[in-house]
Length: 352
Image 1 (cartoon, rainbow, N blue to C red):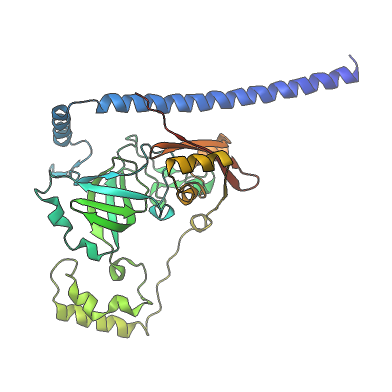
Image 2 (cartoon, helix red, strand yellow):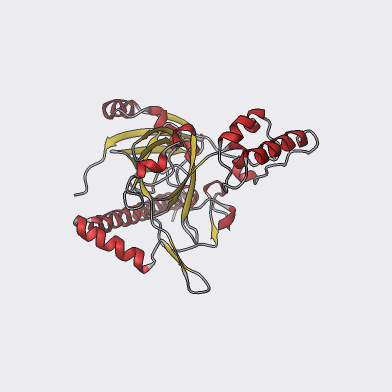
């Protein structure tokens, strides 16, 4: 066999290996797509019930202690029932922003249920005076398995303890998000800042109060310790009098000159966020105009790279699609240039 023939065979072998590699990637992608479609079918079948059947199943779920009950050591139970439901443009986990602060242009609604209060709108009186709220909710679309170690996207596949991360895969799958109130309409809270899947059950809502929630002992903004502000609010446990609060405020303001501020520390991988350059194809721009979707909203969703560590590092996935409201967004990532292009924004086809 001549040297030229050997080189030709090597080249053909190289091409064959590349084709096999591409086929494996396609099979993996198809398996992932099939699994998601099967999960969607199961969810549709599970949700396809008359209203009476749903009430019965929900009541049975609470009695059986699935998501809202915890058995303590002495045999008693701690029971939780959702106070409402979150409505967002994300029908599935894929593509949901990792933090609420990423999606400040995207709006959602917290719809309080009438099962907790006969007049749920009464529970929201006074909340319009606050700009932000903490929302505690349930990761209802997560598989029920806790992980002691997880792989945050920014660690490129490396693993850390679950309590050193904000992974949704937790022993108690509860979410905590700080969102901005835009409007309160009856028993509904309209807000900006989305990192929840549509239909997430809400367990609690708490107003954001700077002097309690800021992680620094020294507050650089004196207005946070204004005595009128403190006296106008009830203390956290409802016990302190206005005189005690005013005295506490005065002692705190005097001590600010003596005490050094506490330092807020986070690991480097948290602060080293990688922001991608986002571009839109002409086709995607036309489609967004037809569907009345703002480009800034899509940019916020993908500039932080919504791909999981597995898809980005193991699977080397460059094409990524996810649902946003009634549209399916398709983007192509170029990791060598640290960029992403939105290539298509089409109306999601009904699976029914």
